[in-house]
Amino acid sequence: MKYKRLGLIVAFCFASWLLFSLVVFNENPPRKAESQEKKGSLLKYIEELESDISHQRNLHKVLVENLDRLRKNPKSPPEKVEDLKNVLANLGKLKPQNVVLKTPAEKLSQTGKPVLPILVFSCNRPDVRRNLDGLLKYRPDPEQFPIIVSQDCAHSTTAEIIRSYGSQVTHIQHPDQSEPDVPPGELKFKGYFKISRHYRWALHQIFRRFNHTAVIIVEDDLDIAPDFYSYFSTTYDLLLKDPTIWCISAWNDNGKASLVDMSQGSDILYRSDFFPGLGWMITKDLWDELEPKWPKSYWDDWMRRPEQRKERACIRPEISRTRTFGKIGVSNGLFFDKHLKYIKLNENPIDFSSRNLSYLIQSQYDKQFVQMVYSLPVVTATDVRTNFNLPDSGAVRITYHTKDAYKSAVKLLGLMDDFKSGVPRTGYRGIVSFFYKGRRVYLAPNANWKGYDLTWS
Image (tube, rainbow, N blue to C red; front, side):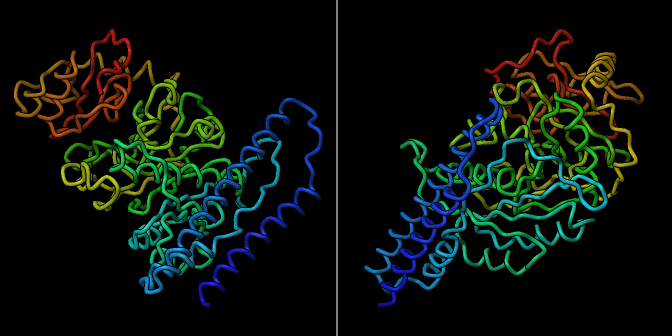
Protein backbone atom coordinates (compact mmCIF):
# COMPACT_ATOMS: atom_id res chain seq x y z
CA MET A 1 0.00 0.00 0.00
CA LYS A 2 2.88 2.33 0.87
CA TYR A 3 4.50 1.91 -2.54
CA LYS A 4 1.18 2.22 -4.33
CA ARG A 5 0.78 5.68 -2.76
CA LEU A 6 4.31 6.60 -3.81
CA GLY A 7 3.49 5.51 -7.37
CA LEU A 8 0.36 7.67 -7.34
CA ILE A 9 2.44 10.64 -6.19
CA VAL A 10 4.82 10.11 -9.11
CA ALA A 11 1.91 9.93 -11.57
CA PHE A 12 0.28 13.04 -10.08
CA CYS A 13 3.53 15.06 -10.28
CA PHE A 14 4.09 14.00 -13.87
CA ALA A 15 0.51 14.95 -14.85
CA SER A 16 0.90 18.30 -13.07
CA TRP A 17 4.08 19.07 -14.96
CA LEU A 18 2.44 18.26 -18.30
CA LEU A 19 -0.52 20.50 -17.44
CA PHE A 20 1.83 23.32 -16.46
CA SER A 21 3.66 22.99 -19.77
CA LEU A 22 0.41 23.22 -21.73
CA VAL A 23 -0.65 26.35 -19.85
CA VAL A 24 2.73 28.02 -20.40
CA PHE A 25 2.72 27.27 -24.11
CA ASN A 26 -0.91 28.40 -24.57
CA GLU A 27 -0.39 31.64 -22.69
CA ASN A 28 3.04 32.47 -24.10
CA PRO A 29 3.21 31.28 -27.72
CA PRO A 30 6.49 32.31 -29.32
CA ARG A 31 5.96 35.33 -31.53
CA LYS A 32 7.10 35.43 -35.12
CA ALA A 33 10.83 36.16 -35.26
CA GLU A 34 11.62 39.63 -36.41
CA SER A 35 15.27 39.05 -37.20
CA GLN A 36 17.83 36.32 -37.73
CA GLU A 37 19.13 36.99 -34.23
CA LYS A 38 15.73 36.27 -32.67
CA LYS A 39 15.28 33.19 -34.84
CA GLY A 40 18.57 31.82 -33.60
CA SER A 41 17.66 32.59 -30.00
CA LEU A 42 14.27 30.93 -30.38
CA LEU A 43 15.88 27.80 -31.82
CA LYS A 44 18.30 27.80 -28.90
CA TYR A 45 15.34 28.09 -26.52
CA ILE A 46 13.64 25.11 -28.17
CA GLU A 47 16.84 23.08 -27.86
CA GLU A 48 17.08 24.01 -24.19
CA LEU A 49 13.47 23.02 -23.61
CA GLU A 50 14.04 19.69 -25.35
CA SER A 51 17.05 19.15 -23.08
CA ASP A 52 14.95 19.89 -19.97
CA ILE A 53 12.19 17.54 -21.15
CA SER A 54 14.81 14.86 -21.75
CA HIS A 55 16.03 15.33 -18.16
CA GLN A 56 12.46 14.93 -16.93
CA ARG A 57 12.01 11.76 -19.00
CA ASN A 58 15.19 10.29 -17.55
CA LEU A 59 14.12 11.25 -14.05
CA HIS A 60 10.78 9.45 -14.45
CA LYS A 61 12.60 6.43 -15.80
CA VAL A 62 14.85 6.34 -12.74
CA LEU A 63 11.88 6.72 -10.38
CA VAL A 64 9.94 3.92 -12.02
CA GLU A 65 12.98 1.62 -11.92
CA ASN A 66 13.58 2.38 -8.24
CA LEU A 67 9.92 1.92 -7.37
CA ASP A 68 10.01 -1.47 -9.06
CA ARG A 69 13.10 -2.47 -7.06
CA LEU A 70 11.50 -1.30 -3.80
CA ARG A 71 8.34 -3.21 -4.62
CA LYS A 72 10.38 -6.38 -5.16
CA ASN A 73 12.57 -5.73 -2.12
CA PRO A 74 10.55 -3.94 0.59
CA LYS A 75 13.44 -4.34 3.06
CA SER A 76 15.67 -1.91 1.21
CA PRO A 77 18.03 0.10 3.47
CA PRO A 78 16.43 3.31 4.81
CA GLU A 79 19.08 5.49 3.16
CA LYS A 80 18.11 4.12 -0.28
CA VAL A 81 14.48 5.02 0.35
CA GLU A 82 15.61 8.48 1.49
CA ASP A 83 17.65 8.97 -1.68
CA LEU A 84 14.60 8.06 -3.75
CA LYS A 85 12.54 10.63 -1.87
CA ASN A 86 15.16 13.27 -2.67
CA VAL A 87 14.90 12.46 -6.37
CA LEU A 88 11.13 12.54 -6.12
CA ALA A 89 11.29 15.95 -4.45
CA ASN A 90 12.94 17.34 -7.55
CA LEU A 91 10.17 16.13 -9.87
CA GLY A 92 8.62 19.07 -11.64
CA LYS A 93 11.31 21.55 -10.62
CA LEU A 94 12.48 21.82 -14.21
CA LYS A 95 10.09 24.23 -15.85
CA PRO A 96 10.14 25.85 -19.26
CA GLN A 97 12.42 28.85 -19.11
CA ASN A 98 11.54 32.31 -20.36
CA VAL A 99 12.63 32.94 -23.92
CA VAL A 100 15.71 35.18 -23.83
CA LEU A 101 16.08 36.77 -27.25
CA LYS A 102 19.06 38.95 -26.37
CA THR A 103 22.13 38.56 -24.21
CA PRO A 104 21.11 39.81 -20.75
CA ALA A 105 22.66 43.01 -19.48
CA GLU A 106 25.39 42.60 -16.91
CA LYS A 107 23.92 42.20 -13.45
CA LEU A 108 25.08 44.76 -10.90
CA SER A 109 24.81 44.69 -7.14
CA GLN A 110 23.43 47.65 -5.20
CA THR A 111 27.01 48.89 -4.87
CA GLY A 112 27.30 48.99 -8.66
CA LYS A 113 29.70 46.04 -8.87
CA PRO A 114 29.16 43.12 -11.27
CA VAL A 115 27.38 40.12 -9.78
CA LEU A 116 29.68 37.07 -9.94
CA PRO A 117 27.92 33.93 -8.67
CA ILE A 118 29.94 31.12 -7.13
CA LEU A 119 28.89 27.74 -8.54
CA VAL A 120 29.89 24.89 -6.22
CA PHE A 121 29.87 21.39 -7.73
CA SER A 122 28.91 18.80 -5.16
CA CYS A 123 27.99 15.12 -5.13
CA ASN A 124 28.32 12.83 -2.11
CA ARG A 125 30.99 14.59 -0.05
CA PRO A 126 29.79 15.72 3.40
CA ASP A 127 33.02 17.74 3.56
CA VAL A 128 31.22 20.25 1.35
CA ARG A 129 30.69 21.98 4.68
CA ARG A 130 34.40 22.85 4.81
CA ASN A 131 34.21 24.41 1.36
CA LEU A 132 31.02 26.38 2.09
CA ASP A 133 32.31 27.62 5.44
CA GLY A 134 35.37 29.08 3.69
CA LEU A 135 33.31 30.70 0.93
CA LEU A 136 31.00 32.29 3.49
CA LYS A 137 33.82 33.32 5.82
CA TYR A 138 35.60 35.45 3.22
CA ARG A 139 32.60 36.59 1.15
CA PRO A 140 32.51 40.40 1.26
CA ASP A 141 29.03 40.87 -0.22
CA PRO A 142 26.29 38.20 -0.49
CA GLU A 143 24.53 40.18 -3.21
CA GLN A 144 27.60 40.48 -5.41
CA PHE A 145 28.68 36.86 -4.81
CA PRO A 146 25.61 34.60 -4.49
CA ILE A 147 26.55 30.98 -3.81
CA ILE A 148 24.77 28.28 -5.81
CA VAL A 149 25.47 24.65 -4.92
CA SER A 150 24.69 22.17 -7.68
CA GLN A 151 24.46 18.65 -6.31
CA ASP A 152 24.64 15.42 -8.28
CA CYS A 153 24.26 11.85 -6.89
CA ALA A 154 21.08 12.48 -4.83
CA HIS A 155 23.11 11.77 -1.69
CA SER A 156 20.80 12.51 1.25
CA THR A 157 23.45 13.29 3.88
CA THR A 158 25.21 15.80 1.63
CA ALA A 159 21.86 17.34 0.66
CA GLU A 160 20.95 17.84 4.31
CA ILE A 161 24.25 19.58 5.00
CA ILE A 162 23.76 21.94 2.05
CA ARG A 163 20.18 22.71 3.09
CA SER A 164 21.36 23.49 6.63
CA TYR A 165 22.87 26.74 5.31
CA GLY A 166 19.39 28.04 4.56
CA SER A 167 19.21 31.27 2.58
CA GLN A 168 22.99 31.71 2.61
CA VAL A 169 23.22 29.41 -0.40
CA THR A 170 20.95 28.27 -3.22
CA HIS A 171 20.71 24.48 -3.55
CA ILE A 172 19.91 22.94 -6.93
CA GLN A 173 19.96 19.21 -7.67
CA HIS A 174 20.76 17.48 -10.92
CA PRO A 175 17.59 15.57 -11.84
CA ASP A 176 19.19 13.05 -14.21
CA GLN A 177 20.44 10.15 -12.09
CA SER A 178 20.31 7.58 -14.88
CA GLU A 179 23.39 5.62 -15.88
CA PRO A 180 25.28 7.37 -18.73
CA ASP A 181 26.13 5.63 -21.99
CA VAL A 182 29.76 4.60 -21.64
CA PRO A 183 31.85 2.79 -24.28
CA PRO A 184 32.69 -0.77 -23.13
CA GLY A 185 36.40 -0.03 -22.83
CA GLU A 186 35.78 2.95 -20.51
CA LEU A 187 33.38 1.51 -17.95
CA LYS A 188 35.85 2.12 -15.12
CA PHE A 189 35.78 5.83 -16.04
CA LYS A 190 32.00 6.13 -15.77
CA GLY A 191 32.39 8.79 -13.09
CA TYR A 192 33.95 11.18 -15.60
CA PHE A 193 30.88 10.82 -17.83
CA LYS A 194 28.60 11.71 -14.90
CA ILE A 195 30.74 14.72 -14.01
CA SER A 196 30.70 16.07 -17.54
CA ARG A 197 26.91 15.66 -17.72
CA HIS A 198 26.54 17.46 -14.39
CA TYR A 199 28.76 20.34 -15.51
CA ARG A 200 26.73 20.87 -18.64
CA TRP A 201 23.45 20.87 -16.74
CA ALA A 202 24.64 23.16 -13.93
CA LEU A 203 26.24 25.72 -16.25
CA HIS A 204 23.07 25.67 -18.32
CA GLN A 205 21.14 26.58 -15.16
CA ILE A 206 23.53 29.41 -14.29
CA PHE A 207 23.36 31.08 -17.70
CA ARG A 208 19.84 30.18 -18.88
CA ARG A 209 17.74 29.81 -15.74
CA PHE A 210 19.47 32.29 -13.41
CA ASN A 211 20.50 34.47 -16.37
CA HIS A 212 23.96 35.39 -15.08
CA THR A 213 26.63 36.82 -17.39
CA ALA A 214 29.66 35.22 -15.68
CA VAL A 215 30.37 32.52 -13.11
CA ILE A 216 33.14 31.46 -10.73
CA ILE A 217 33.33 27.66 -10.58
CA VAL A 218 34.68 25.67 -7.62
CA GLU A 219 34.45 22.04 -6.55
CA ASP A 220 33.31 20.92 -3.11
CA ASP A 221 36.83 19.87 -2.07
CA LEU A 222 38.51 23.26 -2.36
CA ASP A 223 39.73 25.65 0.31
CA ILE A 224 39.92 29.30 -0.75
CA ALA A 225 42.37 32.07 0.11
CA PRO A 226 41.28 35.21 2.02
CA ASP A 227 41.67 37.31 -1.16
CA PHE A 228 39.81 34.84 -3.41
CA TYR A 229 36.98 37.30 -4.05
CA SER A 230 39.27 40.29 -4.63
CA TYR A 231 41.23 38.24 -7.15
CA PHE A 232 38.22 37.26 -9.23
CA SER A 233 36.28 40.52 -9.03
CA THR A 234 39.31 42.48 -10.25
CA THR A 235 40.48 40.09 -12.98
CA TYR A 236 36.91 39.90 -14.31
CA ASP A 237 37.62 43.15 -16.12
CA LEU A 238 40.39 41.41 -18.08
CA LEU A 239 37.86 38.90 -19.42
CA LEU A 240 35.81 41.74 -20.81
CA LYS A 241 38.69 43.76 -22.25
CA ASP A 242 40.91 41.14 -23.88
CA PRO A 243 39.35 38.56 -26.25
CA THR A 244 42.57 36.51 -26.06
CA ILE A 245 41.77 35.73 -22.40
CA TRP A 246 39.09 33.09 -22.03
CA CYS A 247 39.28 32.20 -18.35
CA ILE A 248 40.60 33.32 -15.00
CA SER A 249 41.97 30.59 -12.73
CA ALA A 250 42.88 30.63 -9.05
CA TRP A 251 45.24 27.68 -9.46
CA ASN A 252 48.95 27.20 -10.13
CA ASP A 253 49.68 23.59 -11.13
CA ASN A 254 53.30 24.06 -9.99
CA GLY A 255 52.31 26.01 -6.91
CA LYS A 256 54.20 24.05 -4.26
CA ALA A 257 55.74 26.21 -1.54
CA SER A 258 59.20 25.22 -2.82
CA LEU A 259 58.40 26.44 -6.35
CA VAL A 260 56.80 29.86 -5.73
CA ASP A 261 58.08 33.20 -4.51
CA MET A 262 56.82 33.17 -0.94
CA SER A 263 58.16 36.63 -0.07
CA GLN A 264 56.96 38.74 -3.02
CA GLY A 265 54.82 36.46 -5.16
CA SER A 266 51.36 37.07 -3.72
CA ASP A 267 50.42 39.70 -6.29
CA ILE A 268 52.22 38.18 -9.32
CA LEU A 269 49.91 36.97 -12.10
CA TYR A 270 50.66 35.29 -15.43
CA ARG A 271 49.09 34.41 -18.73
CA SER A 272 48.94 30.66 -19.34
CA ASP A 273 48.06 28.55 -22.39
CA PHE A 274 47.24 25.66 -20.06
CA PHE A 275 43.67 25.54 -18.74
CA PRO A 276 44.17 25.03 -14.97
CA GLY A 277 40.63 24.63 -13.59
CA LEU A 278 40.31 24.19 -9.79
CA GLY A 279 38.64 27.54 -9.18
CA TRP A 280 37.99 29.35 -12.47
CA MET A 281 35.78 31.99 -14.05
CA ILE A 282 34.21 32.27 -17.50
CA THR A 283 31.61 34.48 -19.17
CA LYS A 284 28.25 33.62 -20.69
CA ASP A 285 29.66 34.42 -24.14
CA LEU A 286 32.17 31.59 -23.75
CA TRP A 287 29.47 29.21 -22.53
CA ASP A 288 27.37 30.08 -25.59
CA GLU A 289 30.34 28.88 -27.63
CA LEU A 290 31.06 25.72 -25.64
CA GLU A 291 27.63 24.40 -24.68
CA PRO A 292 26.51 23.13 -28.13
CA LYS A 293 29.58 20.90 -28.37
CA TRP A 294 30.09 20.04 -24.69
CA PRO A 295 31.68 16.56 -24.39
CA LYS A 296 30.18 13.48 -22.77
CA SER A 297 33.29 12.94 -20.64
CA TYR A 298 36.74 14.27 -19.67
CA TRP A 299 35.54 17.87 -20.02
CA ASP A 300 38.74 19.44 -18.61
CA ASP A 301 41.07 17.78 -21.12
CA TRP A 302 38.55 18.65 -23.82
CA MET A 303 38.86 22.30 -22.79
CA ARG A 304 42.62 22.03 -23.33
CA ARG A 305 42.35 20.94 -26.94
CA PRO A 306 43.30 23.56 -29.55
CA GLU A 307 39.86 23.60 -31.18
CA GLN A 308 38.40 24.85 -27.87
CA ARG A 309 41.30 27.00 -26.67
CA LYS A 310 41.75 28.74 -30.04
CA GLU A 311 45.11 30.17 -28.90
CA ARG A 312 43.45 31.95 -26.00
CA ALA A 313 45.00 32.13 -22.54
CA CYS A 314 43.92 31.94 -18.91
CA ILE A 315 45.18 34.15 -16.13
CA ARG A 316 46.72 32.29 -13.21
CA PRO A 317 48.50 33.39 -10.00
CA GLU A 318 52.02 32.74 -8.75
CA ILE A 319 50.52 31.55 -5.44
CA SER A 320 47.23 29.65 -5.67
CA ARG A 321 43.98 31.09 -4.33
CA THR A 322 42.52 27.59 -3.99
CA ARG A 323 43.83 24.33 -2.53
CA THR A 324 42.27 20.89 -2.82
CA PHE A 325 41.73 18.66 0.19
CA GLY A 326 39.93 15.99 -1.84
CA LYS A 327 42.24 13.01 -2.08
CA ILE A 328 39.27 10.68 -2.47
CA GLY A 329 37.28 11.20 -5.66
CA VAL A 330 36.70 10.04 -9.20
CA SER A 331 40.41 10.39 -10.02
CA ASN A 332 41.31 8.11 -7.05
CA GLY A 333 43.90 10.55 -5.74
CA LEU A 334 45.80 10.91 -9.03
CA PHE A 335 48.71 13.36 -8.41
CA PHE A 336 47.46 14.12 -4.87
CA ASP A 337 50.22 12.59 -2.76
CA LYS A 338 52.98 13.68 -5.12
CA HIS A 339 51.84 17.20 -5.98
CA LEU A 340 48.40 18.46 -5.00
CA LYS A 341 48.68 18.23 -1.23
CA TYR A 342 51.80 20.43 -1.34
CA ILE A 343 50.15 23.32 -3.20
CA LYS A 344 50.57 26.53 -1.20
CA LEU A 345 47.43 28.56 -0.47
CA ASN A 346 48.04 32.29 -0.39
CA GLU A 347 48.03 33.70 3.15
CA ASN A 348 49.07 37.28 2.33
CA PRO A 349 45.83 38.94 1.18
CA ILE A 350 46.16 41.33 -1.76
CA ASP A 351 43.71 44.06 -2.64
CA PHE A 352 43.84 43.49 -6.39
CA SER A 353 41.56 46.45 -7.03
CA SER A 354 44.54 48.65 -6.12
CA ARG A 355 46.77 46.93 -8.69
CA ASN A 356 47.15 47.87 -12.35
CA LEU A 357 46.65 44.59 -14.21
CA SER A 358 46.83 46.02 -17.71
CA TYR A 359 50.24 44.34 -18.18
CA LEU A 360 48.33 41.06 -18.63
CA ILE A 361 46.64 42.30 -21.82
CA GLN A 362 48.23 40.35 -24.67
CA SER A 363 49.32 43.39 -26.68
CA GLN A 364 51.45 44.49 -23.72
CA TYR A 365 52.36 41.15 -22.16
CA ASP A 366 53.79 39.16 -25.07
CA LYS A 367 56.46 41.55 -26.25
CA GLN A 368 57.74 42.34 -22.77
CA PHE A 369 57.57 38.75 -21.50
CA VAL A 370 59.31 37.16 -24.50
CA GLN A 371 61.99 39.84 -24.67
CA MET A 372 62.71 39.49 -20.94
CA VAL A 373 62.89 35.67 -20.95
CA TYR A 374 65.19 35.36 -23.94
CA SER A 375 67.57 38.00 -22.64
CA LEU A 376 68.39 35.90 -19.56
CA PRO A 377 71.59 33.84 -19.13
CA VAL A 378 71.21 30.17 -20.07
CA VAL A 379 71.97 27.47 -17.48
CA THR A 380 71.12 23.79 -17.06
CA ALA A 381 68.58 22.12 -14.80
CA THR A 382 71.46 20.48 -12.94
CA ASP A 383 73.03 23.91 -12.34
CA VAL A 384 69.77 25.15 -10.84
CA ARG A 385 69.29 22.02 -8.75
CA THR A 386 72.81 22.14 -7.29
CA ASN A 387 72.96 25.96 -7.19
CA PHE A 388 76.31 25.68 -9.00
CA ASN A 389 77.75 27.65 -11.91
CA LEU A 390 75.00 30.29 -11.68
CA PRO A 391 75.10 34.10 -11.73
CA ASP A 392 75.33 35.68 -8.30
CA SER A 393 71.73 36.85 -8.55
CA GLY A 394 68.84 37.33 -10.94
CA ALA A 395 66.62 35.16 -13.08
CA VAL A 396 67.96 32.45 -15.39
CA ARG A 397 66.71 30.41 -18.35
CA ILE A 398 66.86 26.68 -18.98
CA THR A 399 66.48 25.75 -22.65
CA TYR A 400 64.74 22.59 -23.84
CA HIS A 401 64.53 21.30 -27.42
CA THR A 402 62.68 18.01 -27.08
CA LYS A 403 59.90 16.48 -25.04
CA ASP A 404 62.35 14.18 -23.28
CA ALA A 405 64.65 17.10 -22.41
CA TYR A 406 61.69 18.96 -20.90
CA LYS A 407 60.56 15.97 -18.84
CA SER A 408 64.08 15.34 -17.60
CA ALA A 409 64.44 18.93 -16.40
CA VAL A 410 61.09 19.18 -14.59
CA LYS A 411 61.50 15.79 -12.88
CA LEU A 412 64.88 16.94 -11.58
CA LEU A 413 63.34 20.15 -10.22
CA GLY A 414 60.03 18.75 -8.93
CA LEU A 415 57.53 20.25 -11.39
CA MET A 416 54.63 18.39 -12.97
CA ASP A 417 55.90 16.77 -16.14
CA ASP A 418 52.81 16.00 -18.21
CA PHE A 419 51.45 17.71 -21.34
CA LYS A 420 47.86 18.19 -22.47
CA SER A 421 47.44 18.70 -26.22
CA GLY A 422 51.14 19.51 -26.31
CA VAL A 423 50.95 22.25 -23.66
CA PRO A 424 53.02 21.87 -20.45
CA ARG A 425 51.30 22.79 -17.21
CA THR A 426 51.39 26.59 -16.61
CA GLY A 427 53.14 27.05 -19.99
CA TYR A 428 52.80 30.24 -22.03
CA ARG A 429 54.34 30.23 -25.49
CA GLY A 430 56.06 27.07 -24.29
CA ILE A 431 57.65 28.90 -21.33
CA VAL A 432 57.18 27.63 -17.78
CA SER A 433 57.98 30.01 -14.93
CA PHE A 434 58.81 28.90 -11.39
CA PHE A 435 60.88 29.88 -8.34
CA TYR A 436 63.72 27.71 -7.09
CA LYS A 437 66.01 28.30 -4.11
CA GLY A 438 65.42 32.04 -4.13
CA ARG A 439 65.75 32.52 -7.88
CA ARG A 440 63.29 33.01 -10.74
CA VAL A 441 63.73 30.31 -13.40
CA TYR A 442 62.19 30.09 -16.88
CA LEU A 443 62.12 26.75 -18.67
CA ALA A 444 61.82 27.79 -22.32
CA PRO A 445 61.96 26.38 -25.86
CA ASN A 446 64.07 27.91 -28.62
CA ALA A 447 63.53 31.59 -29.31
CA ASN A 448 62.17 30.68 -32.76
CA TRP A 449 59.40 28.58 -31.18
CA LYS A 450 56.73 27.69 -33.77
CA GLY A 451 53.92 26.51 -31.53
CA TYR A 452 52.86 23.47 -29.53
CA ASP A 453 53.43 19.96 -30.85
CA LEU A 454 50.28 17.87 -30.32
CA THR A 455 52.36 14.69 -30.20
CA TRP A 456 53.86 15.90 -26.91
CA SER A 457 51.04 14.41 -24.85
